[in-house]
Length: 446
Image 1 (cartoon, one colour):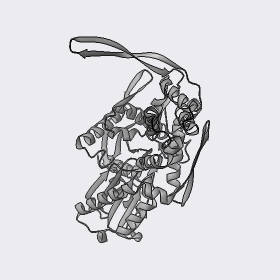
Image 2 (cartoon, helix red, strand yellow):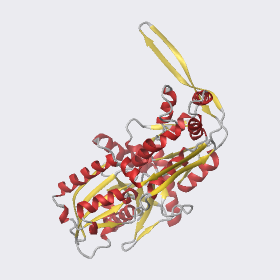
Image 3 (cartoon, rainbow, N blue to C red):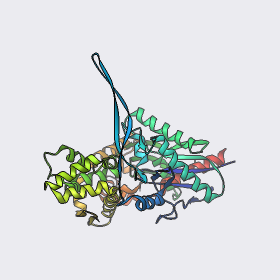
Image 4 (cartoon, rainbow, N blue to C red):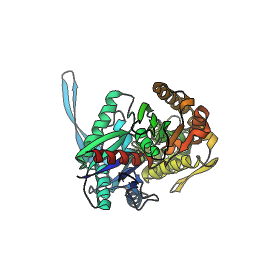
């Protein structure tokens, strides 16, 4: 009988665990990371199509790309047929590509599963569908797990959000893509569990008496909620579940849009639509790398020579052309995380032509994400209403996922349920631990 694992493919981080019937073992898949059991959900693809994930991917990206030389060449991209009345002709299409670009770093792969209008991306000479990217990441994760365990893994329980998307068709499509990617990565048997229910299975291990529990799973990509009866032998029950595609990556984007864009020229440029488009693209992790074209460099150079906010536009140019976007996003995310434990922090980025320094307070952060609070509270009350329970009938509220530690949302849960009921769990491992518990129990039942 082949081994079955729990696999958490997360928006920001991933992990694999096994359960022996008594204890969960988290696999140290990324020994280069501060927490070896946590693997960053990033994928680095080199020009010769070698792949790496996690901290290794990040370090290779920095080594190969930041502040490197560029050389753009004109390349034929295909033909376009023009039809107009009786007129018809074919026109060649050319693009400029950087022939010195050594590799491409991709993040938020899970978000791409549900992103409308995004089916894949061109990387050097190959087009990768979303499924191709996910399959590559899962395959490398599986290989690492097999090396640690010393045996083949053919079965897995994968986590999934309550809703990949509010659109049912997009939701089904996202799960289908994830399932097929897992098969192509080498898993022969795949099943799914909702991520908040997986977190509940982990919490249940600590109980000595039955409880009505709300699982508040707030990660990098989605908010997932489950209301459950736990701890009763043979009496576990899911009363209701709900979710919404709001989470940590949305908060990062809000910080950039509301606080960081002036550092790159917003508010100083008014009659340059091409430059404004570049500034507005800064929060978009998929768009920014594609802006590094000779045409855009020429546009920025002309504006800088004309004295149009030269310091800020040089910073924008450096961000785009020195491959500093990933560093920038990480600094913003680090500031967001810091504000869960301190009242103020500083976002800094000091590199070629960039000297960014922004004091950022928790009060400012809470103001920037305030519009999301009402949506979060609404889905929480809707899920609770579907369960048939009142807040006073809830015995515990279990927080998991990095965004669940944001004080604004902790205070919201305390206000609704009572501070004494709000419980901490391991933000990075509770879901994968629960997935392993389900996988292990199902394997025992076979």
